[in-house]
Image (tube, rainbow, N blue to C red):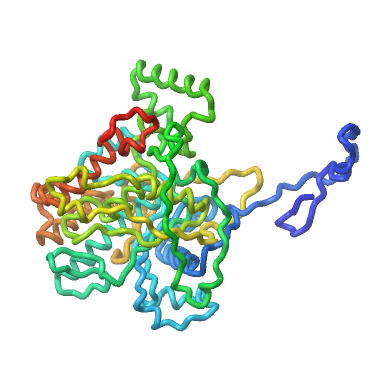
Length: 501
């Protein structure tokens, strides 16, 4: 039997009446010309899943409502028939919980999400699934384009923009409810605030490889229903690394169009890749590397942008503020809670986003400036699942998800409007000069304005580069990536024979 979702009735498939007959019996095909054709059943664009707790749904609903409010109508129209990914950063202020009246219908009350006293405030979001190719990236020496327009990356860039505008307000003696100056004269997030990341789908790369550990279906914890701003938390157990050759903890890059990449390759390089591909196919598939959809191994030449799983792993070691903001921040800024929608699996998200760096020690690279390197640590965020869907549409059983649209979106709390970005080209479709509000050069100009009250020498300031915190950040990241090789420390390689750093 099949369910016709459109009409809400069960439809008998041709041959259903024979399911109880013995296998040896032959069944003649029906010759009834009046028999009804099989109807094309529908399925939800997002599978049903269970939330961890009420708090996770509040985070997701607040995120989606802000996207729907600030997204231009053009973007909303485009994604009514296509799929995309939304990521947001929220500031969680526990001190405001007592100001709210907790009730069972709070999730549906729009007033709460618009209320400045609501404990969850969305401060930045990104929307998109696109990125630039290697050739165009090399040509963008001035950092005027956004190379990676996946939702999580745009959201982090928008967060940096938000933080800089808040710092500028604080510096000009205008009150900021989010940042303050510390005793060192640098900025920090106010101590009673927490940073939350929501993403409507598990980050691309390692986190969607459901291997090397057994996941389980999420179960709802009703004990938090009366305290919706509380949530369960668990200790991250040490992972057992036993499948290095399969890429258990290895980085991946976002895969480019093979035809475009091959056009740039020498004949020797093409032959090398063909031979390596044949060797992989002829080897025991149980021991070959596992590659997440839409990604490739870093050394194949089919991409140069790290997957979102790998970038979030960086953030959990080095902070989400990035190298430039380390100049003016007291300490790295870490994610406290991560809320995920589609493809959720806690054990695999933990491995991909933080625990595979469990043996990495930043101080091994910074003995000469150990005081500065002490600020870095491996952060293990609380990981929650939400059943709230970004895409409430339906697809036919024969239709695949459509991620074709190149339009992406970035927004930060202090911006007048969201910025539409062509994700394949990295340019803004709304800014007159084509430079996105979250491009590297734009963020650098904001940074120099906060630090020097000027936008001169943006991005290339030697004084910025000499700042001890920036130097440590760059050196630690160099130790993880091995620069252009885009490889983590030895534990993140595909083979055991790599020399340890």
